[in-house]
Every structure is written in structure tokens, then in C-alpha cells.
Image (cartoon, rainbow over all chains, first blue to last red; front, side, top):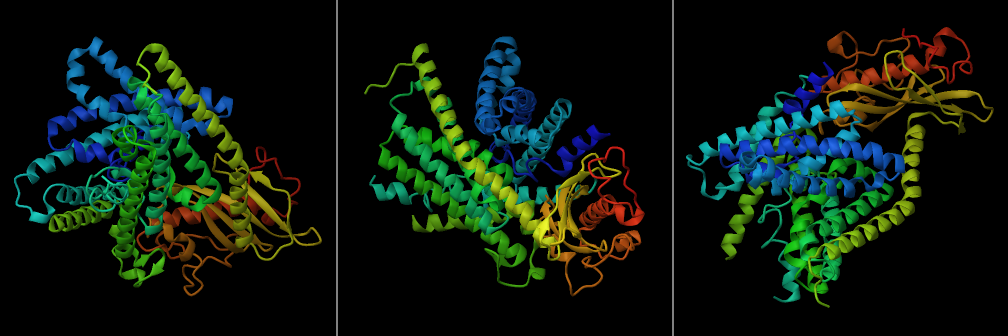
Length: 190
Length: 196
Length: 215
């Protein structure tokens, strides 16, 4: 039950992009086509879960025992950056097809604040490892859901007549706003 | 390019938010009120200024292949310093900005400036560039925060302009952030075009 | 000076150097800000206690009690007058039922167990709606929503929608319910002694055996 609450809350109610404003850069950047949106979602889910596990272990087995929790930001971001590199190298060797699908998105992920954000949130919310993993995975799904819906909307948007001044980014932002409004309708179910 | 230009380009012409569209997460996430926007902007300015200074100082000591991780460490150090200083001397602001303070680290503006500008330019130019871009960012966040606060609750910097009951609450909530930013970007790009 | 080559030795030295300097300087800043951070947190708590209680001379020893339905204990700060007799108490209480989860409050009770004041310490409620708790429930002009002066022991604090007599914040019923939940939890736990009449001294720190009563 508790897990289901975490999942619903992370995907729908507190959607990471539309409600918490994490990962907005890739949300605006790679949402022009549904295909790329799906690729990005896969890469984010992969790295987010992995990063959460690793940072969780670092926090509870290195930083806390040594009483240096103030090095959290610096160690997390380094680990995430290294992890992304590692994943890239391993994928290239082990599964070239997966690398083809996700490869181009991996470098972008280091500066995706959703990854670091979720890693820190898991610590702040005092989840245990299992809850943390589920939380990370559902946030990745929430990210994917928002991204893919938004990409679909933008594909349609290209065919519409948009007032001249609003063309491009402004209308995309306004669309995102309306999408966020729709997601507000989910609030209160948990 | 003279030094004044290094400093002033960040405000309108190369404004990191309105024109370059960087650093969207804190822009949307912390601008529920003008004061929060300003606080976030100034914190980012400090980090940007200091990291630009340090990067331009050490640029000749760091081998090329490891420059990005080195820059990230430098940035993360200053972010943590800001975080601790805020917690000590501005606890209220620290709480309302919350998660977005450690996330300054992944703000693409900062790494972007370190890589694109500070690692190639002199100390003075880098410092001015950092300060200019940072203040431009703070300026953008304050404007967005002000607009959202005014439309949402009838106040700017907590000074009541019109009764709160007439406010459109939506603008303080998440959707309003996207919508307000969309319109502001449209207006700024129109202004930039007219000048050119 | 020429730029060092990207060979293994140089890269290791450069990264090691950068991280060493970085963590050393962070350690220094941490030491320098530790005291002010602790003080800022202390101040916040002391200010909240002073704000929710009627006039008092000093604070007694803080103790913790476990609410009947909660996992986390709540903190109680007894307020004493010059003769060391209790004039009221501030209770740091919480609820997990907020619209966005956790809400932390400081509630003050006077000698009779009536609410003398409250302050919201931590919350993540929607700005402009749920965040209005602070003003809404202490609005002296609107009797149906003001909880200051009420005695949760004798009247049940509930929102009108649930059959109570406190008006919920417009469009934020969940927050209002959670808010009253926290107040009731504080009362049920900290003021149980007013009901069964036993002295508070015997109960302190025994929260594991002592199940607080709910009226």
C-alpha cells in the first residue's frame, strides 16, 4: 500500500516536471518528437534508479558515519557525473543496440537536475533503500509521462496557426502550463 | 569586446533566462514571489562569480581531459558554501528555496560559463562576465517572481498593491509559472527584435 | 606556464588537488557556520515558543511523549512562572495528513488546557491556499474559524464538513483537517494529565508504557 502511494504520488500528484520543476531543461529541449522523448525517458529511468542506489549507499555508509554530511552536494554530483560516464562506456561494450538508442541522451543527463534532485529528495524524505528505488523509478515514469504527452502536443502544435509573437518557446511554455493545470486535477487523490 | 560589454550583455541581449533559455528549473521553481526569485538569483550570482574567478585562475593547471569534473567540483564547493551560509544567516529564505539551493550545481548556466568563457579568458573579463550573467539571471527571476506574485496575490515584495481576494491564484501555482514565463519571453524577444 | 598534458599522472594530480582544496575549504566553512546554524534553529524554536504562550518567566525541562497513533514523539516545553509552577506549555506537534504530507506546528496551551496560540513551523502546502493556516485559524474577527481560546479537551475540534464547528480554509479542506489533526494530537498527548489528574512528573520519559488518552 505504502509503495502504491509513493508511485501514484510521484507519477501523477507531485509530477516531477510539472509540479516540482525538476528536469525542465530536457522537458523543453528534447520534446519536439515523441521518439526522442521515449529515448530520453529510458536513459533517465536507467540513470535515475542507478544514481539513487549509489548515492543512498554513499550517504548512509560513508557520509553519515564520518559525520561529513555537508559534503553531500559535491559527492553526489561527482558520483552522478562519473556514473553517467561509466554507463556510457559499459553500454557501448555490452549492448551496442541499447547504446544506439540511449547514447546521445546520456551526456545530457549529468546536468539534468531531476537526477540530483531525486537523489537528494530520497535522503530528505528518509526513505529506505527499497522505497528510494521505487520513488526514483516512479519519478522517472512521471518524467516520461509528462515528456511524452508534451512531445505529442508539440507535434500537433507545429501544424497550428500560432500568433507570431508566441511562436516557438513561448507557446510551448504556455502549453506546458495548461498541461500542468490538467495534472493539478490529480491533486488530492493521495 | 570591451569590459563593459562583458558585464552588460547578460541583462537583455544575452539574458540567460529570457534569451538563452538556460537554467529553467530554478527559474520556474523558485519564483512564487519576487523575494524568493531575487534570493535565488543572488545565490546563483555568487556561485557564478566565484566559480568563474577560480576557473580562470586555475585554467592553466588543469589538463584538458579532466577539466569538466574539476569545474564541477569547484562549482559544487561554492554551492555548498552558499548553502551553509544561507542556513546560518537567512534561514527563512533557505527553507523556502529548499531543494533548489543544492541544485544550483546542475544549473547549466554556471558550467556553461565556466566552460565557454572563464576557461578561455582573463581573470577580470571572467569575473565581469560571471557578475553580469548572474545579475541578469537574478533580474529575470525577480521579474518573473514579481509578475507571479502581483497577479497571484496582489503583492510585490510583500507590499499589497490590490486586495488578495482578486488575485489569480493560478499564477502562484505550478501552471502559472510556465504561462507567465511564456508571455514574458514573447515580450522580450519582441523588444529585442525592435532594437535590432 | 604551459598547460599540463592529459596524461594519467597529471590528471590524477590535478583532480586530487582540486578535490583536496575543495573539501578542505568546505570543512573550514562548515566549522565557521556550525554555531550560527545551530543558533538560527534554536532562535526559531525559542521565538515560536514565546509567540504561542502567554507571559511566562522561564522554560522547564523539555520532554518527549509518544502520541497514541503516531510513530514519532512530540516535544513538550513546559512554561513556568517565577515560583516554578506551570503556567502553560508549548507543544511541538505534527501531522502527516497535509495536502503535501508533513506539517509541523508549535501549539501553546494555557493552564486550563485552552489554546493560547500556535505557529506553523514547517509545511509544504499549496501557496495561497493551505499556506494560509497561520492567519486563518487565528483570525480574531471570524469566530467560526478562530481556534485561539478554545479548549480541545471540552470541544471537539473538527471542520464543519466533518460535523465540527471550525470553518475550513476556503478550497483547502484537507490542509484544515490535517491542521486540526496536529492540534488534537498535541492536546491528546500533552494534556492527558489534565483529564486523569495524575502529576506530569511520573509520566515524563515513560512514553513507551504510558498510552496517552484521547477523549
